Each structure stands twice: as C-alpha cells, then as structure tokens.
Image 1: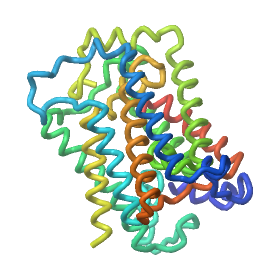
Image 2 (image 1 turned 90 degrees about the horizontal axis):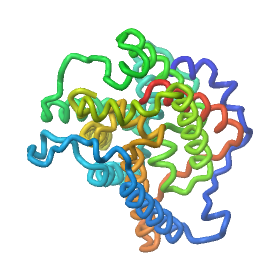
Image 3 (image 1 turned 135 degrees about the vertical axis):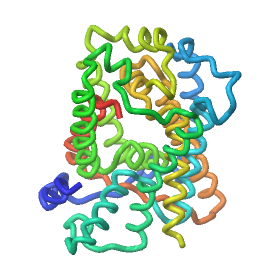
Image 4 (image 1 turned 45 degrees about the vertical axis):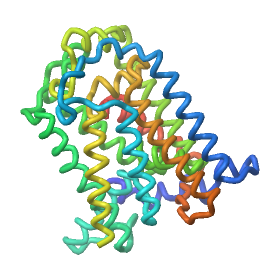
Length: 247
Length: 92
C-alpha cells in the first residue's frame, strides 16, 4: 500500500481521464434489465460448469458431518457473498478489499501523523472500508475454529508435490504474490472482490477490463508454473483427500 | 454506528470465504488450471446474486445504486498484469 502511495502521482495519470461507463449504456438498455440478464446468464453458466467439474468426484465425502464442521458448497457461500456486496451498496459503500487495505493503511499512517497521497482525507467511508478488512480475520478465524481446523500452518500438499516442501519458499511466494496483487489492484481499479465480484454486477466496462486481464494473466502464470504437472491438481486431491484442515 | 456494519460485513464475508474453501490453495490453483471449478462458481454466484438484486431494485425504482468503477484504458492492463502474476504465483 505504501509502495503504491509512493508511485501514486505517476500511476494515477495512466490511461488518462476515467470514464464511468457500463455495457448497458453502450447498447442503450435500461440498467435493471441488463443486470438481471447478466445475473441469469452467470447463474446458468455456473450450474453448467458444476455439471462438468472434474474435481467433484475427488471431494471428501462430508455428508455425515455437522454443518459447522464441514466445507460448504459454492451456492450457499456464493449467495452469502452476493448479499454482503448488496448490503454494502445499500449502505452507500462498496465492498472492495484492495480499497479496504488502502483505507486501513491510511488510518494507520494517520496515527503516525502521515497523510497518504492516495487517500488525502479520512472520513466515515474510509473508516467503514478499513473495518471491512479488519472484520475478515475474525470471521475466517471463527469459521476455522468452528470447523476445528485451527492448527500450525504447514505447506499445502499440492504446493509440496508440485514445487517445494520449503515453508520459506511457500511463504515467499505468498508474500511476493500478495505485494504484486495489492499494487496491481490499486493501479488497475480493483481486486478479485472490488473489480470482479463487486464490479461486474454494476456492468462497469472498467471492471470487465480489469477482471478479464487479471484472470487471463493469472491463468497463464499458473499454466507456466504447472507446465507438465497439471495432473497433480487432481492426483494430489485424491491421494491426500484434501479438505479445510490439510489444504 | 454505520462503520461497524463494515466490520460485520467483513466478518461474514471472511466466514463465507473460509467455509467455502476459498482459502484453499488447491481450489484457487485448480480454478486457474481449469481443473476445479468451485472457486469460480462461488465468485460467479456472488456476481449473479448481486446483479439480479441491483436489477430488481432498479426496475422497482428503489434507490440502491451501485458505484460504477471508472474505465481508464491502459491502467487496467498494467494493473491486471501485476495482479494476475501475483495471483497465479501465490494461489491467493
């Protein structure tokens, strides 16, 4: 965040003046109709994808486990995520974790009497976004505690088999990847939540551009790293019966 | 008072992400390698639910208007490339 803040004057000039356009504006359709059509299209797509999901047959059978112990499905958790995004908008805010980290960074900096260039003034909205990020951790921790998966961190089996069993290498890849992600998100206009999950429902052309570029790049990067070892994804899942506790 | 709703929404979102297995390395890498669709289905379900709710509220003329992210051309390319490389190498 602070690296981004240092380069903010330069990157804020990239691409020139912002245009707040949606694809509904481009094709001249009322936003409500376009949003519902998009939503229905995405729902049809995920139900179709689910039918052809090659990993499902290797999922651990958790049918006999209590609700709070097992991993939940994509539909229930996806609906909860969607309701969170909608609730944020209804409150006049915007659910974005990259923006949240930036706001949190600005509030922490203000404690040291430093004002970030990218967040020149603090407000109720920046407090809201900062607390959004702060809330993530106890929420995930509570889920992990209830599932009984709070444990010492180890290298996940897939990383161990495909790349290395070194915790330093795994930690280094997470840290350096996260640094690139936060800087990229702040330059490009959002992260997986801000540009994609919160941005695509608004039909924003900018969010579609950012989401499209980062997903394509991430898929290419993953394919380069796993070149010749793609079989490990399902092979490791089957051999280790991967679940919330060991992955 | 309103700012604490941010804390609650963040906590619920964090709970759902963990509980849905979105913190799992194999889920994210599986999605990027097109061998495990769960993370993708989670994200697109969230997008779909939000889009339908926005659409219904718009057609009913109830004032829940989302903020539109700006389009700024080449900035999405630079940002998206950095973000994508980070995502692909970390599995986050």
